Image (cartoon, rainbow, N blue to C red; front, side, top):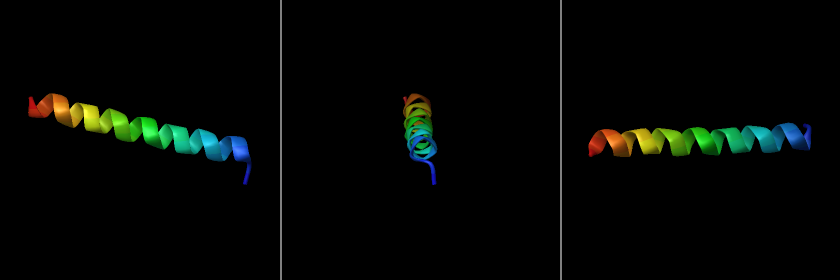
Length: 29
């Protein structure tokens, strides 16, 4: 596994999770 690809994948996953949580919070308000 390439370290750069692993880091990019992890960062992308974190960003997507944060974005989804933000959308849920905005809809809940």
